[in-house]
Image (cartoon, rainbow, N blue to C red; front, side, top):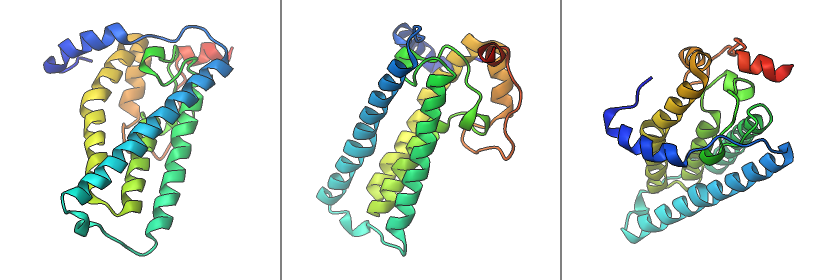
Length: 203
């Protein structure tokens, strides 16, 4: 698996900062994951939508905001469900991956259990759909545009780097998984192959 040429130089810089988690107690990795999740939510699900909402008003575009029946209920339900998916994904990265979601503290083992059996990036998917839930709840086109911009950045800039690193570290196990499980659309049946790393973990 190769990175696009235009991302190769940036990858070399990113690679120097990326690190695999050192052996640590599960409780400590859970704490680091909780802190990261809280910070990510405050920045990307709090400050980002807040600024987009106020910029929309400052530009005189508040008239474009929308309302529909059951709007708040749909938004809250979507936020909770997707939040649960994101949090459970982080849990499996800690328990089965022996690391955290942090790029500087990446899991030491390939995780293909839990939500990862159905979709390759459940944590990113859950978090980004939480952003969509906020946009729907606010009825704000600006917030939705902000979220779709985040989806584009993650899919076309962050994801290639992440997949390149996983392919390099886990080789055929990851390539088989990547071919079988989609990135964004969950599979109807779970991925059942057990890679050598997961077998070793269960011993």
